Structures are given as C-alpha cells and as structure tokens.
Length: 262
Image (cartoon, rainbow, N blue to C red; front, top):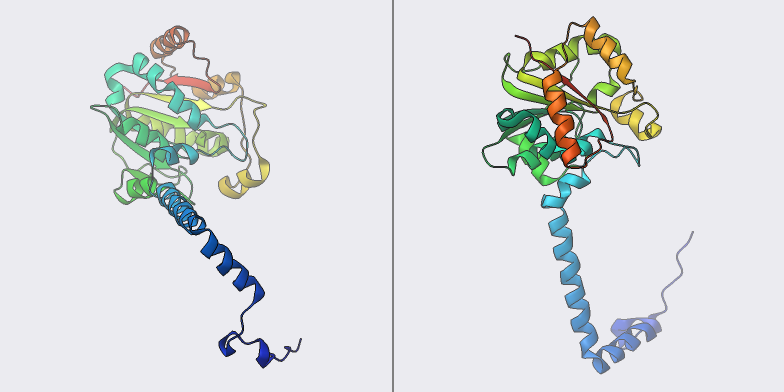
C-alpha cells in the first residue's frame, strides 16, 4: 500500500498540535493527581513482576506439573512430608527425590532443620523459577534420563522418594529403573503413583514426557515387585498408614514402600 503524503499544515513542529495530545495536556494540568497515581501504579506493577521472577517461595508450588489440569503425585509428596517423617524418622534427614518438579520437593525439604535433599528431574526443565535454576546450577537437582544408571553409589541416600516418573516408563525400562532406585537407597524407597482413571492431559503430557502415562493398579505393581525380586516394607507401610489416620490424611495417589537391598 502507498503511504499518504503528510500535510505540512498538520506537523506538530510547525506550531500546530494534535487534538488528542492537547486534550491530555489539558487534563494533566487540571488533574496533577492523575500523573502521580499512574507513577505509583507503574511502580507497583514493576515490583510485582520482579518478585514473580525472583524465585519467591510461591514459585516452587506454581512449578508443579498439573499437566494442564491433571493430577500430580509430586504435589501429593509435598502434602505427605509430615507423614513420611513419622514413618521413616531419621531416614528423612537425607533424601533423594526423583520425578518431575523435583525442585519443589527439594526446596521444601531444605526448609527443615538437619535435612539434606537432592533431586533428579527426568525431563528437560522449561520455564522454571530462579530458585530451581540455582538448585540445578549447584548440582543439587540433576537432569538425568531414568533409562540409564543413576549417577550415585550404592546406598547413597537413606530414603528415595519417586513420584510421577514411573508412570511414564514401559515395563521394559521399569525392570532397570526401579532396581536402580533401590540400589542407591539404604533404608527404603517410597513410590507415589497415580490411580487408574486419574485425569492426565494428553496433549502437553505427550509433548513433555514422550508418551501418555500408564496408570497401573495396585495388584499390577505388587506382581511387578515380586517378578523383579523387590520386597515391600510392611513395617514402614503400617507406620505410614497409622500416621495418615492420626492426621486425617487420605493420599490422592497410590503409595508403595519398598525395602532396600541387604
């Protein structure tokens, strides 16, 4: 499209003025409080924007993978931390969490006294908080493919907690991954897995995890434990149930307790 020629008589520099600008100038002169109000509003919005990107405490919870409205067992881990402390006692002083949004769990554990926490994020991190980026930069949270051996020695952590991640692995890889989780634990492994029928958003889920979640029944998991020679920790399981009853806590995910290798 051709540009229209500019009318010299309408140029501002020739002494003329636009009606809209003149109107604003007139209102500004008559209402000085308007300018002050706009400056204050801009400052408030700027402070809010800076805080939202500074890794504030609430950011870790916003990072939880709700899978576009679906359920998240990692968020369930955060709710279950007081129950796990009752069930596992001193074993909670050094924990490895494995699963999406591991930064959230690690950050929560670090707020406790005498607690060390480490994390493995099995998928690429996108659009995370500054606090999460700091944990990755320090090596506290690692991005690692669970289909390969974990970068830790045997019995490196008293307790290993895994959430969501196993639901996206086929039995072929579960046969390798779950024994690896048990290998690096000293006192046990706690698995948080979704119930069959729980909501999972298909589109974003496949894009991030490569495949839809396979939500398996408790009977399937129990058979799998037997087939892979993994033993359930009945003592820890009972303590977890008792603590849950006292706290009126009802897990939204399946929770399994496994023993470490002797």
